[in-house]
Length: 304
Image 1 (tube, rainbow, N blue to C red):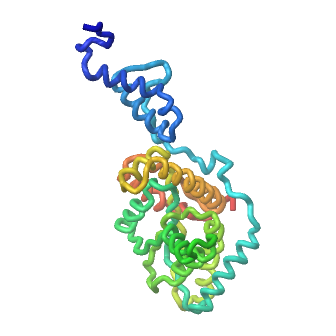
Image 2 (cartoon, helix red, strand yellow; image 1 turned 90 degrees about the vertical axis):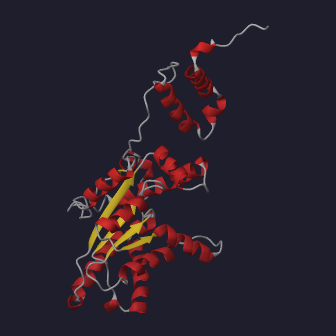
């Protein structure tokens, strides 16, 4: 009978399981694949549970603490653009809407809430919570508008102008009701973010010009969700089976950068605080409600 070189049988299944984890952690595949960070985190937590330490990992569990990337990472800040050209573009779109509906017939919600954050941060879930608990009775999605424009273009080069017009049309042709509150979900376009100050000024100008229309006092609210990539990807993997870790990770990096640009730009004009959405979504909803219900949220920044 050949000699037995393996560990004694009485060591138990936990020993064999943990030793397998240690071998996996030094395997080149686990070091260099796109899933390396995610796999190492899971293995690290398992190693911590069995109280093993091979000198390479500390044994401490990773956390999902979000970082203020839109403040700390200056690379994500949008490039400066000509403010006059943005204003001209906004005026051009509003002139088209006025010609179609009549300036005197335009009406806007009493509140508009911008939901910002990367995929998997919980924007849609939080938005539905706002609809139930804060009486936001309209919800539109920039992502859906972009997809509609891309399908209509049939492969032509994407243009943000039609999406901007679609959003402004929905904003300024809302039902004539003082209690209309609108949520703009997936607000991750820096081009559309640049027109927000002009949109706010336009709404106030309408209210001054047509006092007999009893237009509501316009209030802007901003809900900026930040979340670690691992938490966002984990949520997307649990939501549906059409994607994988690589596709969701790529999507996160793309839209997290765009969201950071939007947050950085809006912070120059309006006051708001980011909400860490890496926690349980019920706790995130509570923190988000507290944030957007603050009187200063959405008010003009002192830096503007």
